[in-house]
Length: 275
Image 1 (cartoon, helix red, strand yellow):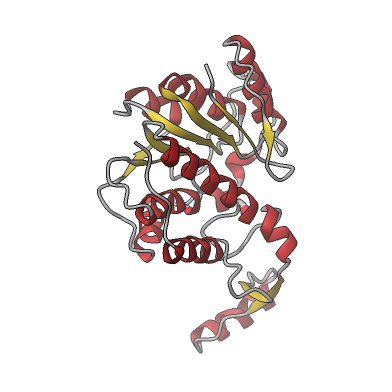
Image 2 (cartoon, helix red, strand yellow):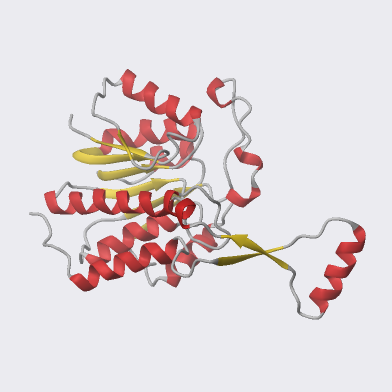
């Protein structure tokens, strides 16, 4: 039996969560610490630091970009934007209404925002019999293995240090919203190592945000067979990373998956499993 409709107060809570997770509740200005280049600038910066002064620059905030997840927010706990958070909420709420069995998982979580929101939705609906699985290496993306996955040749995601968010930081972010509890399970390591061994019996939602062909395929191979009928697959990087899209297409072709792929915001897509 599906859950009952959420209260007006709970809906306000979820709307506020989305604004906080994207750091769009304040808007206008965000500040980014400046890392001076050149010896003279570094000496000046050192003197400022000794005096407790930090040099910053203004980051121009655009609601339109933040809505569609097109910017890289300096402080937000997610970069997927409001449109993809709305999609995530709609999918989870449909799962709860129709009683599609299983847990929720995201593979590739950055600062944890999408999984924090999954847990918030379960809290809003007073659901205590489902887990949120948080799967990530918590040290960035793997270097490409073009011998095994030629689609990833030349991929540079592993060089982006800003993608390497520690497990401790992600747990801390859950804690800031009072959502770090026994219904949140963390899978630390490369997907090829953790997902085959994960004690996940059944899934109702799979959110893929691994960027690369290898990461996307590892998640699909190990998780899609556990997805319940009526469950959802959400692909964050379909319209942004060609290798990710090719992994989705290859897996769907191999397994004769014909469920319609629906666009979200020009970047993310999703489909509902029917068979």
